[in-house]
Image 1 (cartoon, rainbow, N blue to C red):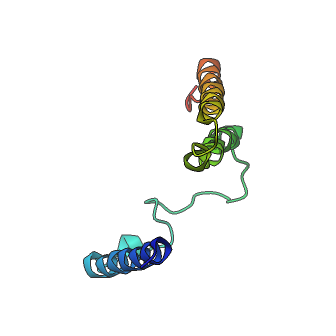
Image 2: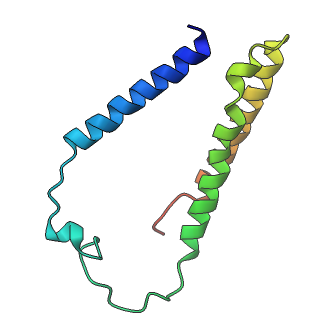
Length: 116
């Protein structure tokens, strides 16, 4: 059995086990609070068309910016197999350093504080 067949078979078996455990262990006794249309605990008081605070959008944009770290660092296991893995390590260090400096800058400017 080659490695690809083994990995596909292992993934299918593990997925099947996890799905079976989910159906078996899940609690299926919903109460009235869970079935209500507003799960936050109270009915809406005003119009749903009120403008959002700009803070919501700022936090979302910051999350997207810092979430790019995963997309940039994802190919690293394959990049370490190149002829010069030291260049990969240097680029990885630069990316993490830039993201850390950006995080520190946003923290110092108060962009991550929710309440003013």
